[in-house]
Length: 209
Image (cartoon, rainbow, N blue to C red; front, side):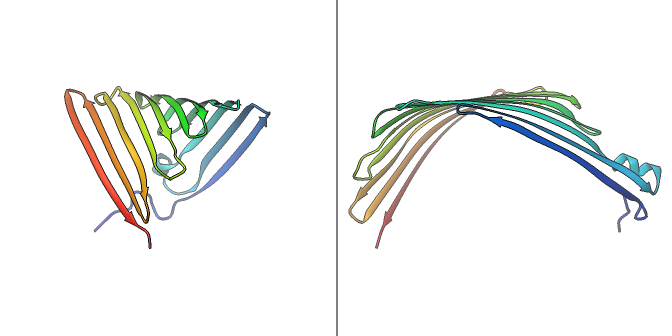
C-alpha cells in the first residue's frame, strides 16, 4: 500500500531563462552563466507548493594560461551563487597547474585545487584542498616510470576532518611480447581520531600475440 505525496490532480508549469556569454584571448578566457528556473502552480492543493522549486544560479569563471617551450602553466577560478527553496550556497573554486619539461623524456609537474562551499540554507561550510607532485620519465623502448605524491584535506562543519597523504611509483616495462606494469601506493588517511595506513601493490603482466 502507498499514498500520494503530491495529489495526482495537481498541475504546474516550469519556466527557464538562461544566459551564457564569454570572451577568449590568446592567454585569457572569461565567462558568465545565468540560470533562472521558476515553477508555477496551475491547479491542485496548496500543499503542493512545498514540492515546487525556484532556482537562481550565477557563475563567473576566468582562466589564465601561458605556454613557453619547456613550461606550461594554468590558473583557473570560478565563483558560483546558487539559491533555491531548499538549498542555497556560494562556491569558490581555484585550480593551478605547472609542468616543466627539461628534456624530451622527462616531465615534472605540480597541480593544486581549492574549494570553499558556504551553505546558507541549511547552514554549513565545506572546504577542500588537494595538491600533487609528479615526475614522469619516458624511454624509446617503452619503459616508463612515474613517481607521484598527493595531499588532500576536506573540512566540513558537520563531519570530522579527513586528511589523505599518498605516495607511490608506477612503471611500464616492455620485454619483447611481454609488458609488465607494477604499481605501488601507500596511503595514510586520517578521519577524526581514526588513522589508517593502507599500502597497495599491483602487478599486471600482459603478453601480446
